[in-house]
Image (cartoon, rainbow, N blue to C red):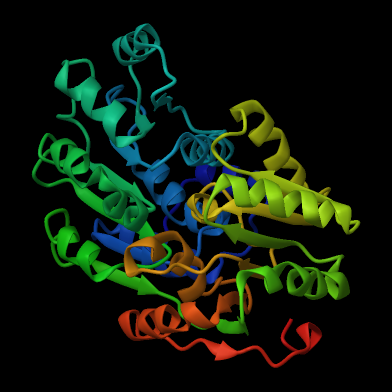
Length: 365
C-alpha cells in the first residue's frame, strides 16, 4: 500500500494488524488519487479506511489545510478526530474541529497558527470559509461522511456552497451506509468517475403485530435469550426511547438510552459504556443509527418503530440494507399490520428483501 513507516507505526499502535475487507478495497484507490464512494455500515473500520490514506497524503511541511472532512453531527466529528489522532500519532500533523460548539476565537487562532486537516459540520465550516477565516486553496482531499444522511436532511445546499470554494481538482471521498437514488444524483456534482465500493449481505427480518401495543412484550422476549450480546433498538422519538428504556429496566435489563435531549457529556459517558461492553442494550433515536455508534461489536439491531414513508427511512435503511464487513449482521423490524405496505414499498425502493422472522432468535444469531 506504500504507507510510510510512521504511518504503519500508528496503525499498529492503534491495534490494526491485518486490513479489513473495506480497508483493502478503499485505501489503494484513495492513495492513487481516485474519487471513491464507500457504501458500508458505520464502524471504526470504515473510518480508518479513509483516515489512513488521507493522513498518508498530507504533506506536513505545508502548514495549510490539505484535507476537509464533513460529518452531520458533533459526535461523529469527534470520533473521526480521535481515530485520526491515534493513527497519526507519529506523524507531524495538526487537526482542527469546526462545529457549532467551537468558539470563533478558537477557529481564528487555529487557522492562523496553521492546520493540515479540518473536521467539521457543513454549516460551521461554510461560515468560516465565507468570512475568510478558512482558506481552501490548498485543500486536495474532500470527505463527506454519512453523505446520505446529510443530503436528505437538508445539508445539500451548505455542502454545495463549501464544495464550490474548493480547488477544481480536489479528490472526493463519500461514505454512507446506503445511498438513496436522489443522493446518487447529487453526488455527480461532487465526483467524476468515482470507484464505488459496496457490501450487501445482511439478514433482514420482520415480525408482524396487530397493534403497536404488542411490540413491548415481543422485544423483551427477543432480548432475554441473548442478554450477553450487544444489541441496539431504534425508535422514532426521544419520548419513545425513554419509555422503552424504562420498561426494559423494569424487566431487569441494563439499558443505555441515547437521544438529542440528553446532555452531550452524559451521551459521551453512556456511549463509552456501551462501546466498552459495560452496557449490552442501547435504545436510541434513529438519528443515531449512523456514524456516532460503532456497530462492529453489535450482533442485533431492532427497529421498534418502522417508518411510514420513504423519506423517514434514511437512517433506518442505513442499518437495514447494508451488511457489516466484519460478519453477518441481523436486523429485525417490528411492524404492525398497517405498516406492512410501507415495508413492501421500502423493499421495492431499495431493491432488497425483508423476510419473516422464523420465531427463534437463537436460530438467526
